Amino acid sequence: MFLPMLDSKTIHFPTIIYRPMQPSDLDALEQIHAALFPISYERQFFLNVVNEHGIVSWAAVVVNELDGRGDELVGFVTTRTVGARDSEVDDFLLYDISRKDATLVYILTLGVAEHYRNLGIATSLIQEVIKYASSITSCRAVYLHVIAYNHPAIHFYKKMLFKLVKRLQEFYYINGQHYDSYLFVYYVNGGQAPCSPLQIMAAVAAYFKGILKSLSEKFWNNDERKISRWSKCKETSTLLVTQNSRILSPDSPMCDAV
Image 1 (tube, rainbow, N blue to C red):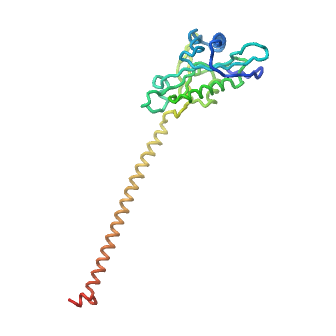
Image 2: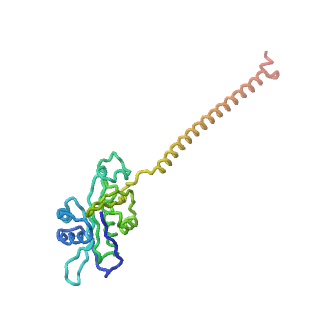
Image 3: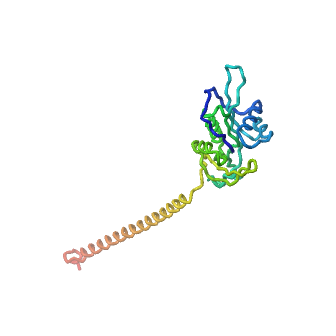
């Protein structure tokens, strides 16, 4: 996916609300996509967005109360829910493989109109996505693609605590040229990255350490039991010898009887 380059210029601090996309947003949504992104989206994509046909989206809307104009669409994020096993993130996700219903939320597009950047709109839209994904019990992560040259977008997602998990060679093909893409993941509901080789080695070492400790304790307990049995045996032998010495003593009444 793409995130437009950020601009430090801002004009004012308008009243902005966040809501689901509506059919009335269709034309504005198409115009902003055309202005922001280097690729063209088919009309059906926008129809699916505003009519919620397989796509869940949020709109950032400026409320124009003073000039009498209608609300103005200035930002958006569009998403689709996919099965974890059917996604390219499956190799970067540790989850219970017995759960066949594990899902992910994929961010299709995210954009903010040029004159409304640096107002926290993109941050708020991503927070809406994370909150939505977290509300789906089967969802384990939110993921997306960023074109390799869009450094502001890369910085933005890292700031939002997304994990960069892979660089995809020649992922995009735009105007006759290939571009690499970065794959970003944000884990939710207990989803996590698979163990790294170092973590695996640490886990194996801890496992064998536990076995050695268990065996050591077992041998120690066996030695203690042997010592305990030997002590009891020694005490018993000593007692018998003592008793016999009393019985065989010349001063014993029994000896007198003999």
